[in-house]
Amino acid sequence: MQLDQAKLVMRPRSMSEVGDLTLAMLRTHPRPIIMGFLTGAAIWFAMDLALLAWIPIGEARLGIADEEATYELYRYLTWMAVLVTLQTPVAGSLVTLWLGREIFEERPRYSEVIREFWKLRSAIFWVLTVRSLVLPVMLLLLIRWGSPASFFWDYLFPVLVLFVLFFTRGMNPFVPEIILLEKCPVRGSTPREGSNLGLTLRTRSNHLHRKSSGENGGRFFIQGVIYFVLSIALVMTLMSFRGVLFLRWDFLNLPVLLMIFPVGLWMVSAISVVARLLFYLDTRLRLEGWDVELLIRAEVIRQFQSSSPQLDRREQGVKRTEKRGGQDELIHR
Image (cartoon, rainbow, N blue to C red; front, top):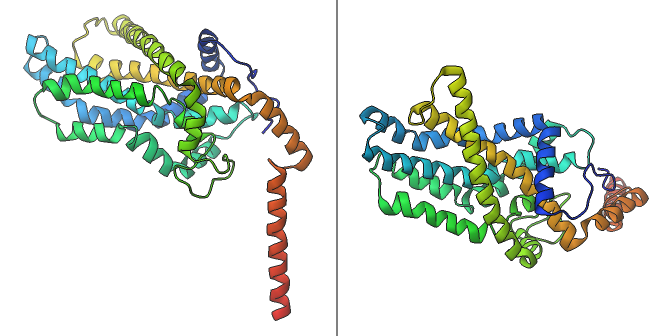
């Protein structure tokens, strides 16, 4: 990796500059971002429909335009938005890994990105799926499959989930990057190759998020408002294409509810994954002087042909041990 020749200029940026850079990344690297996010989001899209599609389908049979159907459709739209919000970090894991390589490498191979993702599968499943409430919420919806609407479970509980997200993901937004890019272990086990030696996920997250938790929370709220407006804009844009092509402009029908609305949400989710990675880089630059660290590490690599002189000495010690073991084996024979 060319640590001192990154494709992005490593400097602190304002929130509007990060937004502009996000759009530039989408314009310059559309194919890997789209392919990576489609690969990660396709299975979640299918499972969301399996959990929630029965609501609009059942209301369409009974009359989707009556007053009682309005409450059921609100239930469907709310839970679909909550599920997509919860699943965005794990669905965008391939995009995060690929962009992390793309910044420093000329042309990263997609097969290598998938192989790296597979090595991190246990941490991704536990942290980004179980602890991030994705699996518990999906199990709740599976248990309530076919049940009538409830004020607590279908109207109040989704709001509580978003409230919890504000104090977890909002204050600690860069946990996916710590797992995928820094490769910090979830527990105090042997660090992976290329990871921050001696730092677990919790320790690294505290170091990175503690000083900027208030700023992260405010940024999370502002981004939520922006993504909400952007979701409405994209859904209306997709409906406009549908209206021009098929002369159908009504909203209350199954194609819009089952396809256009979720697709609009997932498009915004893909944008949010790219923006989160850029905010992660900006936070490291502001708090840790990461641009200086990259220059030093690049010089170390040029001088010692490794990421650290200590690693060189450690590898030499391993080679001496193996050599002595081979000599002892020959003497014994």
